[in-house]
Image (tube, rainbow, N blue to C red; front, side, top):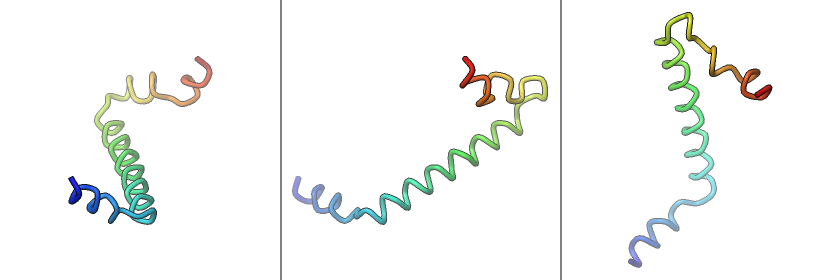
Length: 55
């Protein structure tokens, strides 16, 4: 149990910020990959931010 706490304490704020940045980058990359595989008729139709904010 103590070893888990020590391993968690190794993650300081800078590492957490880098992890969050990497996660955001991967999410954007994955979104671009999904958009490229969607048909043009379905591309962005239910996923547009404008429609999400208006609804």
